[in-house]
Structure formats: structure tokens, C-alpha cells
Image (tube, rainbow, N blue to C red; front, side, top):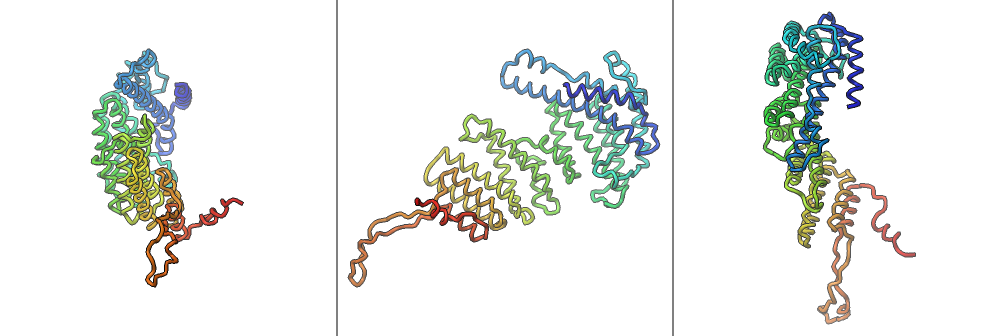
Length: 462
């Protein structure tokens, strides 16, 4: 809270010093400059509201596990975000009405109700007047820090509607504006040299971001509404597949082991269709599965077993990686093959520790070798694959050197009656996995600092 209070005081002082009515600005640059402080102040209050809501949800989870809460935890659980909601509404009504800003105090709640309708109408009038003639702005000069006056005003209007009327009304108002901009001729494929098309595409994406944030906050307050958030995110990830913002929001939506959800099916579809392949989204999905699995695996009381939840995340990751290596455009990635080897080693390590038999260990060894053979067909130059395989074999006690086993004396005589070889002993060479991996590296022309034969010589006693 110390950080919030310091930031709040700085922003309030700066807004009071400027007190510019951006609704009366005549240029796009002047408008954006005037809204910068207001946007920062509004986002500060929203972040604080989200932080309090997440804290309350965490305390509810503790209570659901039948763990008693002490007085301090109960007091934190009872904390609400009323003061931040009021500060945000106070700021928004001042923006809409064009009044000189003064800091919020609890005795001004009635003023918020009085000015709310006038601010709402002022926002609506300004938005629909500006949508009729969208200003292009300096799209090429401002990238990647692009801002637009319509996006800022819709942001203010949406959150004012959210706290005065509700999330449903706020989302509907934003979508109505977005649909109106789309009706102006915004297509999925935008000409990258047409500033007007780029501006409209940017506005459509910005308004979808506002809707997603509205639904995200709504789902924090009530998990029942997460289905609506998932449905809208599915639309966003299809409509704005290259947006890093929506890609980074994947953990907010896809945080379970389900493989039949529409979001997960969209990720798998992007792998199968080369035209829709979204490497950033695939990378984010892998990161989520690894993070969730490690969190569950590290929380296990026994490190030798994997819970059903952990198995679910591991299966999702393996399934995703297997689909990746089946596609020509992705199978040459060393990272994908290394992750696939890691998944196989985790499954073999835990299974061999529970049911340790010679047959199971040999099967695990052969499975790792087969996976290595598959990998070096596509990325034979990756030295890390061979080293990873050796490491995983060592974990299941299957990293061995070539040895010779004596079978016994040869009692068979030669056809001419000579018995001089009766005293010779028959031997069997048992190939070692370490020698086999070393031979594969030599075959693929991968540099080995110390060959095994030289190592044997160096280790001989003087």
C-alpha cells in the first residue's frame, strides 16, 4: 500500500497542476497529451481493485480448505475496494463533465451520483461524433507505442458504465462502438501501408482489450461468469491471433487440465494448419503446462509420485509437443524435442521408482533411445539432445559402458579332431548406452572433447 499511496499522491498533484479539459482539444496530439495523466490514474485504481479482489479470493480458498483464519487474516478478508471504486468514479465524472479536478473525499459520494449521467452523455456524444470521422494519427511514427483518442475515451466511458450500471451494459456499449468501426470496412487482412485501415484495426483490437479487461474483473468477483470470459477470449484469439496482449492472457483462461476446451482446440488447430500456426501462442501454452506441472509436482508430499492433476498437465504438454513434431514447419526445433525428452524422462523416472523391475527399466531405456533416434532425424546437430538422453538414462540407472560377459568354456571340438580350442572361453559383448550415444555423436560429426577410449587411458593407474 505504501507504493500505491505514493503513486496516488503524485498523480493527484500532477492532475491538479495541469487541469486541462481534453474534451475541448482540437488536435490529436494535444488530446493524447492531456489524457495521459487521467489514464494513468484510472489504471492505478483498477490495478488496486484487482489486487484486493485476488487477495480476497486467496483467503476464501484458505477458508474452503477448513483452515481457521486468525483475526488479521479475517480483517484482510473483510477488506473491500470501495474507496478505490469511489476514487475512480470521481475521476471519471470529472473527465466527462470537464470540471476542475479536486481530490476525492468521502463526503462527495452524492456529487458522483449527480454528475454521473451528465458525464456518461458527454462521453457518448464525443465518441459517436469522432467515430464518424476517424483521425489517422501518426501510426508509423508512434509504433509500437500507438495511442488513439477514441480508445482512451471509450476506456473512460466503459469503466464509468461498469461501476454505475454493470459489466453487461459496459461490454455492450464497447461492442456497439467496435461494430460501428468494423462496419466502416475493417477486414481481417489489413493493408500495412494504409494508415486509415491500420488505425481502424488498432481501434478494434483496443476495444476488444477493454472488453476482455471488463470481463476479467467480473470473473474475479464471481467465478460463475468465467464461461463468458472464455467465450470472448476464444473470439479474440481467433480475431487477433498475432496480438501479444491476448497471447499473454492465456494463463488467465486456460489454467486447467482440460483438452476439450475451445481454447485448447484452437491452439491445436493452429498447429495443424500451416497458415494459422501461432508460435507465440504455442510457446505460451507450453509454458503454462510446465509451470502448472512443476507447481503441482513440487507440492507433492512424496516426490516419487505424480498426482492426477500433475499427470493431466504433463499429458497436455506431451500431446501438444507430439503434434508439433509431426508438422514440417516445427519439427526442426531443438527446444520442442528437448521438452519431449524431458516429459518422457519424468514419466519414466516416476514409474520406475514405483515398479522397479529389470523389464521396466529396459523398456524405459529403449523408449528414450527411440525418442532420441526420432529427434536426430530432424535435428542431428543439436548436442544437447545427446547429453539430455545420457542424463535421463543416468537417472534410471541405465547409463552403462560396454562390458564383456564370460559364458563358459567351449566343449565342442573341431571337425579334424583338434582339441586345442577346448580350453578357450566364449564371451559376449554387452553394448553400453554411453558408448552408443558417443558413437552416434561421432557419426553425426559432433565434437567430443574427450573420447571414451582416451578417457579409459587417462584413468589407468600409472
